[in-house]
Length: 112
Length: 111
Image (cartoon, rainbow over all chains, first blue to last red; front, side, top):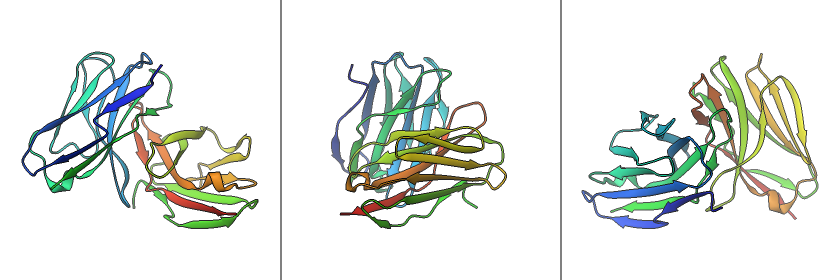
């Protein structure tokens, strides 16, 4: 039982490049979330998926897209990376009816 | 006013002392409150949740909630160097289970 996994662990991009951050969970959770964490800003919600087939915007969705591929996987795509997207990205999941979110190890992204 | 506010610290306490971490929130409709611990370079992990006014104890940790004052706190008794981390306060408002986090308080426990 790996919990929530994220790939890659670390990535360097040039401005304008695109990439997809992958997240998977093996806990049979219904809801999945993408956050970014910046120094002095705390964790901010980018997008979430309450269940397979649904996605909704969070607090800071601009510049990102998401795909809930199936119940296990929730990916985050940067179509044209900008230096302002340099951050640590965390994926989280939870079971419907419970409020505890379980976080993945994070992806550190540097956009030059 | 920010939705969830925490003193960013750093808060420094000697080993064995009580560490007191505070959080205020702006939305009176908030119904669920959480404390996450995050070690440097690691992901947040849930350590306490509280839903009703009063105190909730779990080992060395006590969460306190006062909805009238819109205030939630975390007390860590007999602080250990291993408690040194950033503590994040988080709140759920409404039925969509979206967490809103504070910026976190950095706690350092000195041996």
